[in-house]
Length: 198
Image (tube, rainbow, N blue to C red; front, side, top):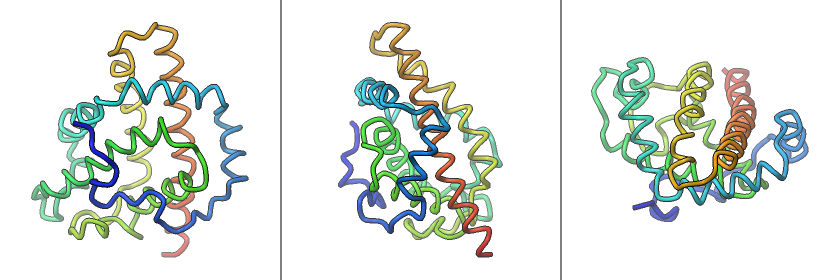
């Protein structure tokens, strides 16, 4: 069953500090990514298709792929290399919600604020804090960027799972990829800020 946002531990959409990335900058990034109203429309369609599949998708990414890549899997382990099941479970529920937010939320100030918050939670500024665990101090940005290629490739079969036409699947997939690229651009600002403050 798909989680409801108010039941997800640590999910604080609409209740995080304001992003230093401005809406004007976001609009420029949209232009750079070729992210238009058409992409927004196709993401809404993708949201309907992916609804009900988010747990399966995140399980595929985490148990099916990341678990077999130790330098990625370790970000949900203790420094000694022991699993932290509750951390993995809580963050997986937020990961599922991120899929839906990517597709269904308006890309407004609240969305921008939460994107920046997500990024900070992958850096030394906030990683582990929301769940009160001891794991790796940050996820290196190159690992995040590299794994996006895997997510973008493996999301497509899920977009095709409910009988949409090949054209619709391609359009949804293109919109998804542009959105994730846009989010990476926002995330990079958080990493830059944290690195400057070290």
